[in-house]
Image 1 (tube, rainbow, N blue to C red):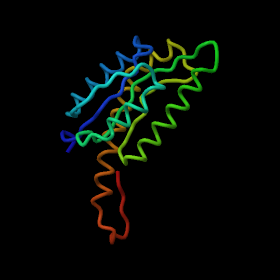
Image 2: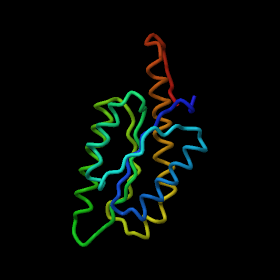
Image 3: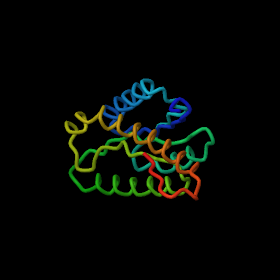
Length: 153
């Protein structure tokens, strides 16, 4: 069942020291799970992701989108503005297209060292969430509405 899940990944180029390693971790995890990655699309930064995600979600050969990014704390609150606005728009796109978009973005208010420590775990969790949500959405869409109690897990 997992082998027919088609994933797209949107990757932020900003903080590439972190995000490129996250991408490598996500690709390796996908290969372990037998998941097909149909698209890897780079965007300048996390704030730029929603437009690319919108395009990816329109593709018939994309079941879910995984985001990869890192919003590192700077001297101002800019990191909070970027992360909060991007995450809100990303969630809205998931609802608009009825396809999972998972948040593999570290930050805001995270240091480079903290982000570096979370490279593998965040990338793997974002991919796992995309797979689980795709499978669970498929199940709920197949359920007979006359069933008394349905548990989707």
